[in-house]
Length: 160
Image (tube, rainbow, N blue to C red; front, side, top):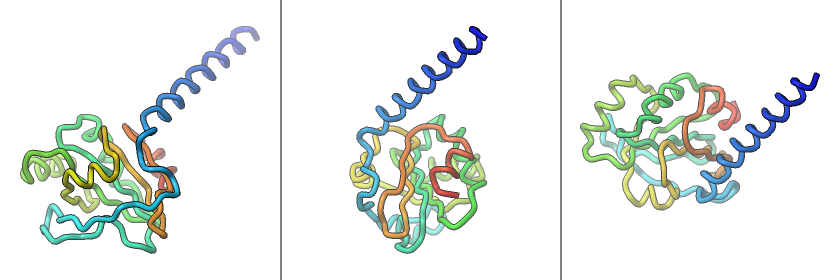
């Protein structure tokens, strides 16, 4: 019995540390319930500008960099998302469009990929990759996170 209580205490301590780290990482991201910036960004495949999100649609916006190893591991989880929301991947901090295209091709990402720029990075307070926001139907930040997230974690954040 003492062992179970000790393990429970250690698990609780570990959970508190993880939650504390998450809050610390996300401290500079846009506030929940605040209005989300919207940009017209060129599509990687067509070069035609697309809005980051459409009012009236729930959207998960996944910001990544092609040199980011965590992005490489977690981006495949975007392909499994389905439901009543859109998914957009936005490339930032890249040297060339070819670099982004090769990164995406290697991962076989099916979500639309948009080409971001420094102003997008600044307006969304992106300081690390991956960072993602869920934008609700009214264009407000519904949730946000930074770092690796599993398929289940992404679905929970997107409300799926």
